[in-house]
Length: 339
Image 1 (cartoon, one colour):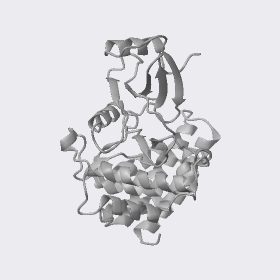
Image 2 (tube, rainbow, N blue to C red; image 1 turned 30 degrees about the horizontal axis):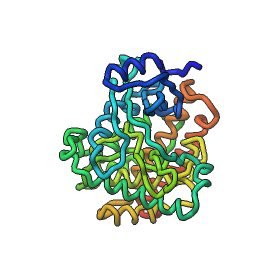
Image 3 (cartoon, one colour; image 1 turned 60 degrees about the horizontal axis):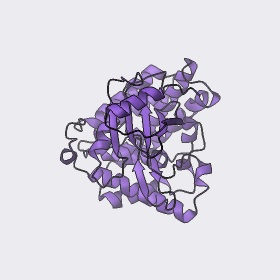
């Protein structure tokens, strides 16, 4: 069966050219795809790998940055942050016609939706959530320069640039006028903290972007999906993790996300757990929550915009923008201290 975006013979040649021994027939199957990067599982008679490449259509380089993902994963190999072992990187797209990363396959469980979550007991959910928060704190504690990531981003002015970036993105993808967007943007621009922290940030941290141990979900085997990572303010990561808990995030994902389940700790409890694990003061927390809501509102709008342009079909994509007013209103409440 043909797999869009995959050429098995070319992948096998690439692996061999990079010193990877392929024993027997190489078999490849699609694990996940769609709006995100395409993820394939490849296996021979002995070994298993994960291959990732950008989507076949609708490429947006900044959102599907293979080089960024491979760089940060390689740098974190010997850190306290669990990541897959890196194998090879095709920066030029010589094998598949697009950049590609290859890492070792990590055995475990990915909890994407509430059906997946139903397989875990309440104690396991509690343990997994606590471990996820600890892993995020561990990531933010890594010294970027010590792992070769000193030039991985520009942490100075990061938050102000984020406010400007997502406002510009709104102008590109809006499907209607929403007064709350301009109101929230102006309020965020006025409230940018004078001082902010600097660390490696994941950019999309929640349970379904990790692999949990299959027998002990309280252990994170690997953090995945690093294509949005950079150097920036760690509180943007923590706040996004908390805002992802909003039930309307289901509309953005088009599914009943595991991370929105009421079986998990609420946003305030997550924030406090992070502050304790990271030893960080949550100063200007309302600002960071507002920025995260602003970002997710724009993302939801963008999904529906692309659906109407024909690049992201389906009723779920068409409905994603229904979440946008909710996120904008929540952002304004957070900034005004009325959570």
